[in-house]
Amino acid sequence: MAVTAMESMVRSFASGHPADAARALEGLEPAEAAAILKRLPRRTAGGVTERLSPEWAGAILMRLGPDETRALLSGLPPRQAAAILQHLEDAMREATLSGLRPEQAKGIQSLLHYPPDTAGGMMDPRITSIRVDLTVGEAIAALRRAPRHTLYYLYVTDRDGKLVGVLNMRELLLASPRDPIAPMVRREVVTIPATLPRDEITSLIQQRRFVALPVVDSEGYLLGVVKPDEILEALQQEAFGDLQKMVGAGHDERALSPVSMVVRKRLPWLYVNLATAFVAAAVVGLFESTIERVTALAVLLPVVAGQGGNTGAQSLAVVMRGIALRELVPGTTRRLLLKECVGALINGAAVAIGTGAAVLLWDGRAGLVLVIGLAMVVNMAAAGLAGAAIPLVLRALGRDPAQSASIFLTTVTDVVGFAAFLGFAVLFMPLLV
Image 1 (tube, rainbow, N blue to C red):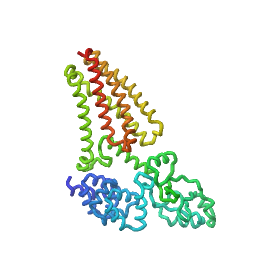
Image 2: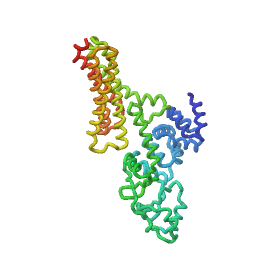
Image 3: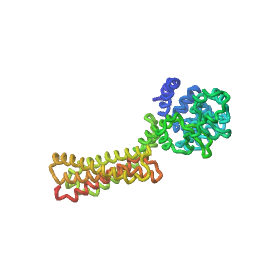
Image 4: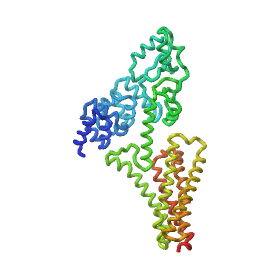
């Protein structure tokens, strides 16, 4: 589609449907998207920028320069602005921040101090708190002056900004205006440190249904709040990204991403997959003479490998879910591996019976039934173990457990499946010839 036609479509969606306009821009090369974004009205462009993925927004804004970037980010919530700034080059980031209003720059920089997948990197620093030494009347007046989007719970701090507790709105409104609020403050409040990882925040959210969770630093100063809906949205995006990474696609790739991104993200892993395919082919090559003597083996090879691949994918999906939801507590690894291996072994025996019956009807040789049955059991058991072990090994090595795990799994199931099937064929050759 020509850029002019795409620009027309983006303009038509930008005002009423900025999310759709953002998805359309993500389907273009960054330079083309930047040119269209620059020609949109400033207010409209800001709404579209807010709905771009941070990676794409950073790539597009790098083509616009610090002045245009500053103008677009100035209208965004601090969290979105910080997420985009993390994808800009250092010089561009500093130039953009230097021209923002001091209070806005301070809020964004407070987010940039922390990794994006921690409470500090995901919090909203715009929050209204009440000093503990106020009276009821003064506290109500302070709340009336506060912007509505900064009110979650009635957090109470001391003069230095350290979190003291929370107030009950009903108690505050029913109290006398001259009463101090200190006796009404509930001192036991659930807080999260700014360095807490996102997956631990998720566990806490699942246990306690809060509208927001206050974020504090190591000394107890109130920094901001984390909203559960934003955490869940981030986890959803991460889950989709993990699914893509498991098969060698980029985690930030979209359905309409440009061809350049498709090639850049996928091609390296396709070469890895090609190399592993040659390994599997080499295993088959070792048994070339065996296949020449019993040509039925070549027909049945994909059956053994395919069932192993499916079994391994099942184990891989379950283990990835356990890692994402923090179900795998310390000490459960051995139990998990044993469970997956035994389960795959039993399933392998059941599938081997069905496969053997089909092969008997097709070929009629009992020896071939024995060979494919044994190979099926061995390969499916190995696949179940590999599907569980690969993400655990990647995590233990400090790597992303989702990163192309299915490519490594396919290598294991193909190599083991081919070696087992053809190896048993050599062992029982008198029954096949």
